[in-house]
Length: 210
Image (tube, rainbow, N blue to C red; front, side, top):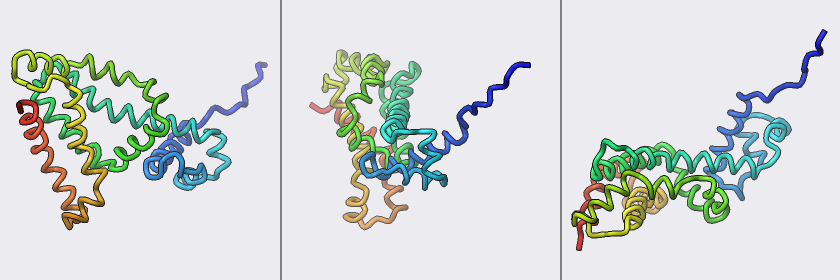
C-alpha cells in the first residue's frame, strides 16, 4: 500500500491574508518603520505563523513593492497601448484613471516615491517599465504630432513628468493643501475630481505652447 504524503502544502488563504495585511502596513509605514509583528497584528495572527509563511521581511516587502509598481504602471500601459484612442483621449484617460486609483489608495504615491529612493533600483529592473512606455502607441502618436507641428515639446519625457506631477503631487501634499485651502476630506476629494477635467486642458495647452 503506497505511503501517503503527510506534508502540508502552504495554505493560499493564509498567504493571501498575510499579503493583504503587509500591503496595508507597508503602504502606511514603509519598509524601515514596519516590523513583522505589525503585519502579524494587522493579519490577526501570531508572529510564528507569519514567519512560517514568509521568513524575511525584505522578501515580503519586495513582493508588495513589485505588486504595487505593476498595478501603478499597468494603468498607464493599458491606456498608452490602446490602438483605438487618440492622443487627446489618452491624456484624458490617464488623468481620470490615476486620480481614481490614488483616491482609492492615497498612500501609494508617497510609498512608491520614498521606497524607490531607498530600494528601487533593483526592483525597477524587474519591471519592463521603460520598454512599455517608450514602445507604446502613445509615444508613436506623440512623435507623429511633433512631426506634424501639433506639439511643440519634442521630448515626451516632459509630458510624462508634467502629467504625473499634476496628478500625483496634490495627493502627496494632501495635508498642506487641505490646511491652506481650509478643506475637509470631502472638499479635497471634490477638488481632485475637478482635476479630471482640468488636467487634460492644461496638458494640451502646455504641449502646444511656444
